[in-house]
Length: 180
Image 1 (cartoon, rainbow, N blue to C red):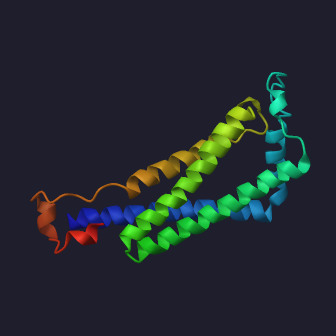
Image 2: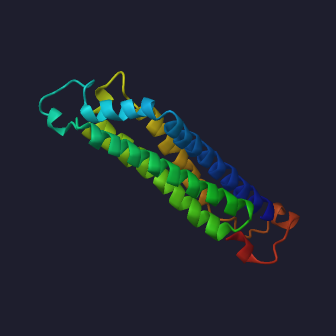
Image 3: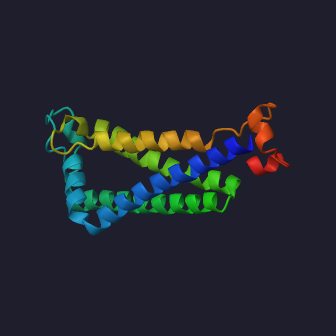
């Protein structure tokens, strides 16, 4: 049991660190190369590479300062999520499992909201990003959403129960509180 518990904690630590690294790289990339993804957001919001169906085009946002404000909000959200996940990783490394699980959950939810609600739902559906061959970030958004979801599930796996198996006999626990 202790071995499995340690393995789950290691998995949670490394997977949290993986998403933290990815979000850090995304945020740093968007800050250091602001213009590239700024153009992405502008095109998605303007809907200028979609089928231009007049029944949908009323949704388009073509005001540059609104487009730039939306992009700045995305970069701030990405940066905040990266910091929260880095803090979660630090707590996992310190073996503060209850706080690590809580902080990691918040960070992963931030990522899932950004990529699920922000890019898939709002960008993909409301602004019809799925119609664009040039400015379509749905595949990347789904990768981040799914990765974060898998990590969230892993972080919340329950510790193994005492079953009397040979694994439990390998390293007996003195307190169930260490499993939290």
